[in-house]
Image (cartoon, rainbow, N blue to C red):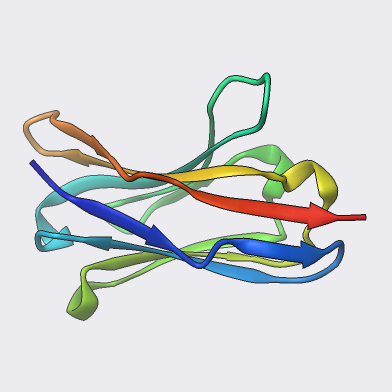
Length: 116
């Protein structure tokens, strides 16, 4: 099973930026999809952004134009650059991988808090 470790969360003022990192224990060449999800208190977990092995990306409408997902094969790491943060972006952010076999792995999550 893939081990995923997120980092980069924290407290930031509205309009600020953060970059989240998700380090994988295996080569991300072998992973079909890497994604970032978030869960705010009292809400369901939702997809924020994903990147396919082919390089295609997908974004939640609420973050389009503000967030960018990318990857570094040499570091087996996927990033989420978050700009123009809003209080409604406050949530625990999780990294997820989906292997070619369909096996899914989740990270432990990292808290992002945006103050108004």
